[in-house]
Image 1: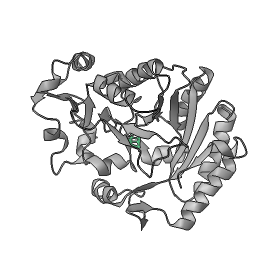
Image 2: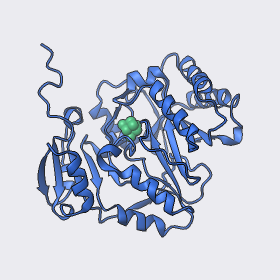
Image 3: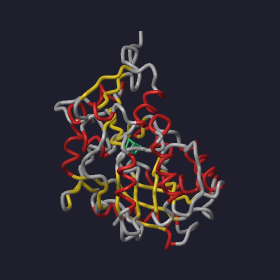
Length: 330
Ligand code: SF4
């Protein structure tokens, strides 16, 4: 008898709601989308989210959703390992924390140490904080896959509406999912992370396969949306040149690069501190246990491998798209 998963509750079978979030309209909408879940009132999201000694690998089979009001910091300056694409006012914001997918290499495992997902329902406060910034470039899907969660939270829709009413604010929504809603706005970037089939299968559990992601990219381009392709993080595996070379060819054949705003290229890198936590959560992961070098507090591939991978990818891409549209992380 196969018992894998059979005895676990469904995803979001339990929803923890902060008392102060209970009467919020967004809370009511989200609870209405999950009518069979058990609702448990809590004082503060950290009581659940930040508990010690959580076991990611058990939790991920039956993630809890936590609805909360964020009274703390709402917008952050972009981190040095993330790409600004030449935008001086680079910020990110997190209306949700954690992701419904399960990529081996995801830094969120190192950052949070839990598989549960927090959704902050006070979007209006985030919108007000972002609107105060001077010509910002805002990444709204770094600490989650906001489009992957949209059917539950509706937060991608909120950022799309926000972009529509704030033409001076550039918003990026990064995803491995297929957006249900595509809205063509000059200040709204749909950024699709693409990985070779081999990498998707081995290390990106729960995400749509490459074929579905390419179909989503094509759909977005044909809908007139601003589209970015992210070949980041590239994962160093035996045969990587073949896999990543084929990926560029597949994009060229199915979508083409004419309608693409820009592309990013980057190899896997992560804060050494996060890597330590991730390795506890992923004791068998080939990606996490690679013998990385440590540079300025970050775990990175050795310089020769890093250079080789990024040069290879940029070289392949430059056959299709101008080098002024190719952004490397370092
Ligand atoms: S899709 Fe992105 S955010 Fe989600 S698990 Fe994978 S790497 Fe992490």
